[in-house]
Length: 254
Ligand code: MF3
Ligand code: CO
Ligand code: CO
Image (tube, rainbow, N blue to C red; front, side):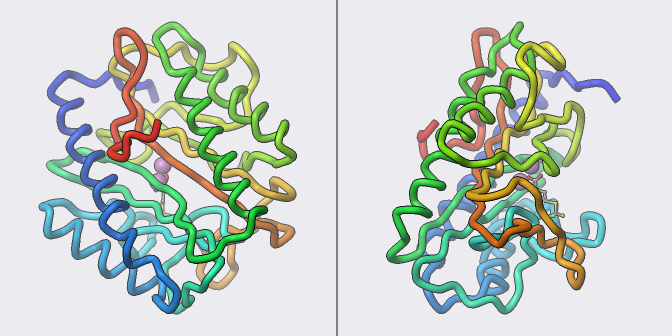
């Protein structure tokens, strides 16, 4: 499979879908409070996406049944919404991918619930910095591998490890396209970035060991092997003539 260079028309479609995914993460924020079940949050997310003329890409994707992935604390990614009750001190990732007019936009962020420990806050902050440093490598002519190099360097410097079992990916026309975006990579390795490429960067950073294990019952929920915390942020990125645009950054954070 080759990397798809998107046309201006496709880019407009991907931009709109990305914005809706990001608006969904904004919409759900006031509901991520102690006492709510993650399955209830998923229901609200689905209703919001549908109301805005889109569908959730995860629903029915390889047997996944929900509109979002909701991953608390030691869950690295692909958390299946269920009866888990959100509690004070939790750090929770919510990941939403919209399909709007046939175009895909994919984003996730962390939510800090009530009084969160300094230990957890620092992990979340460093993960955000990792994504920011990855985005800083996004410009035409640069190698894809420099994204993962920058992310891993920053995480390791802070005493954390980078998950290598799940990666970023091309996105836009389909849910998961080429290229695979590794969050640990060698400098100047991989494809050369070109204007019109759209892909995600979605580093998962662990407080302890990098390895994950997938829940045997639900077949999806991936947890850290040592039970320690994990954090993740994700943006859909467009490579432009002179750099990039984070299409899902409606907060203006990045
Ligand atoms: N949105 C996730 C990603 O960032 C993929 C979720 S696939 C699912 O690539 F099936 F787990 F929902
Ligand atoms: Co993704
Ligand atoms: Co995602």
